[in-house]
Image (cartoon, rainbow, N blue to C red; front, side):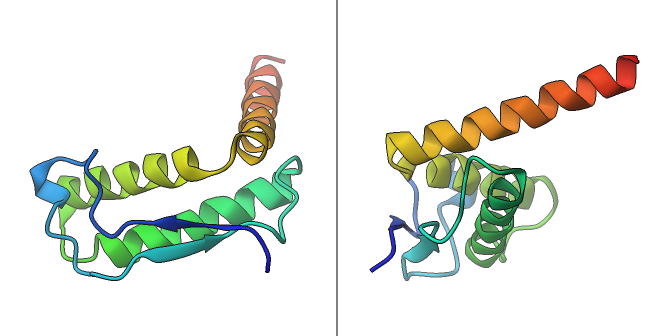
Amino acid sequence: MKPAVIIPALLATLTLACAGTASAEPQRLAYGDLDLSSAAGARTLDVRIARIARTLCNHHIGLDQAHCERGIRQEALSTLPAPARTEYVATRQYRASARVQASTS
């Protein structure tokens, strides 16, 4: 079985505005098929997390939905095992610094 993490439908770290999440089922975030040290793998993980966040936060609107989705993203990334999270963060930091350098050149 490929590695995956389970994201609880109701997250204790979110405010009460997000506590009424529509889905009572935990969501499975598969990442074992991704190379998180590559930009493509990190982007694919972002897409998967965004899809889960939209599903879990679909009853919120406006800023409440944005806040809920941000909380889901934080929770998803925090549940990744340390090696996978480290690869992902390093890839994201590299891409961000490359964008800054490109914009200042």
